[in-house]
Amino acid sequence: MLEGKTVLLVQEDLPSRKLLSEFLHPQGCVVLEAHSGPDAVKVSETYSGPIDVLVADGKMSGISGLDLAEQLRLSRPDLAIVLLSDSTEETALLHIRGVPFVQKPFEPDEVAATIERALRQNGEVLKSKIAG
Image (cartoon, rainbow, N blue to C red):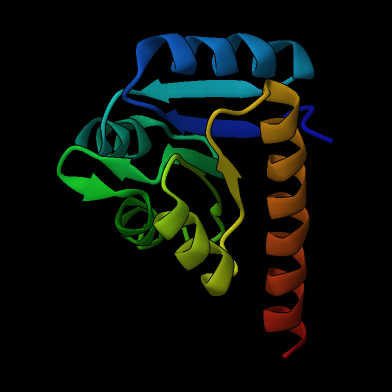
């Protein structure tokens, strides 16, 4: 289901970002990498194609993953979101808000499954807004 999807991967930790990128490429994804929230905004602004899903750290220097998602959704309202969390408090908040997340440490296939679930949920929300 990830074939042909574009993922904006925002991960401050380079080894983790590379691991996920190397896992997602063979799944058929276009992976746009960013090392910070401001970098992700620049990538989003300069990339002319659609971005299907944001996969980002829940907490980054200077911005939270939720704040980044809200900012990116201003120009990309159809963007699905998956956050990566290493905090039990943050995980609980994401769960309550219904935001798809993966608890760190994670396995790449767990991230892929969560991306698929987020894309399905996002598609259902968009369909209900259209049917409205």
